[in-house]
Image (cartoon, rainbow, N blue to C red; front, side, top):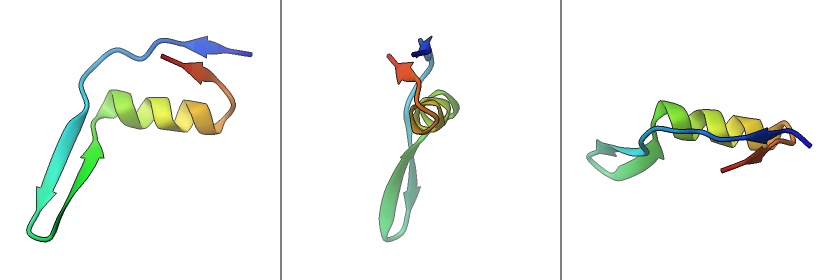
Length: 40
């Protein structure tokens, strides 16, 4: 299994009726997990 360390910040995008968790490093980590990697 591939192991990946993702470094960066997690951000919230605020909209009038909701907020969404995001940020480049978090988005990268989520996609890496979906491809089967172990991410920290």
